[in-house]
Amino acid sequence: MMKTKSLLLAATAAAMTAGMALAEPVKVGMITTLSGGGAGLGIDVRDGFMLAVKQAGNPDIEVVIEDDQRKPDIAVQLADRMIQSDDVDILTGIIWSNLAMAVVPSATAQGKFYLSPNAGPSALAGKGCHPNYFNVAWQNDNLHEAAGAYANSAGLKNSFILAPNYPAGQDALAGYKRMYEGELAGEIYTKLGQTDYAAEIAQIRASDADSVFFFLPGGMGISFLKQYADSGVDLPVVGPAFSFDQGILQAVGAAALGVKNTSQWNKDIDNAANKAFVESFEAEYGRLPSLYASQGFDTANLILSAMAKADVKDQDAFREALRAAEFDSVRGEFKFGPNHHPIQDIYVREVVQEGDVFTNKILGVALEDHADAYAGECKM
Image (tube, rainbow, N blue to C red):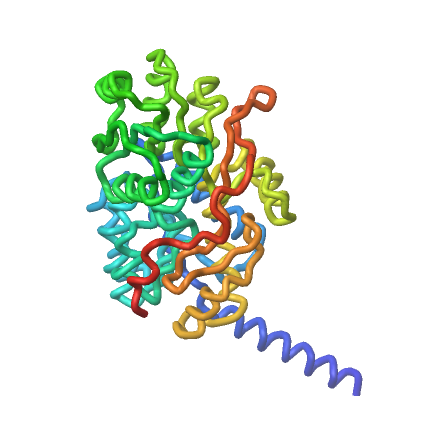
């Protein structure tokens, strides 16, 4: 009798193993920037995402990673190949909003899920929203809205504002102006990828500004901050985390000390998931995580949480599992609004030096449980 029972158990185990082997994994296509200007942002998103996948130890997720070179045409080609040839279930990874606008509407129209770990253009939050599009980071305006709110509380009344002329730059200045109650000493759109800011700094110097707000991500921010520090212009600077994040600060150095910036994440957010993430990321990669790494990490954990509840081939069930967002976010409480964009706290941070490392510390909350301005335009 015992022998028969053992054989039955062995047969059941073999059948379960065979079934698991036959089950197709969830295929994720990650298109992100891994070379050229802005590569550090894509590398951080990739590394955060893959750390979560590694920690989960789930054999049923397969990730295909490609470099978009920050070129919309390359991103579109990669997305088409991943959808049509690789048969991915989910796309993710894009850093830049102009690339997101080129890829996301087509991907969702073809029945694929797109989970953004960064770019959050307003066009996809409002009338262009889609049931299969989720943003796990923020809507582009959000951190800039928080900067405007902080400027008010700091008594700044005449800001000079600048950003690159592309969707995220336009959203940045719109977001700042939405919350900021003072006057504008000047407003400039710079060229995307620009590295020489002598003309803009001259305009700031000649204005009667009492502060500068800028959004210049990646290498653009490094160039501006170094040139601004060398210019002798001594006006307080306010910006979003994108211009004062971990990778950028090491390149800028002491020129950024004391600058106030806004973010929905920082390494000192006090919860168990964040503490474990910061420690494990540093152990895995030998550097502190950035905002982008935290967003990649959360995106992967959101996907894994949905996989635990639903089959990705059952799109309605999987969509509901994503919407529930039942995972331990490094930000603490995390929930989606009706347009699948986060409702979350946004903090004011200050650039500080810890030993040889330039980093940020949280000073307080700029906006609490903040949603985006476009959700009311989303009909789904």
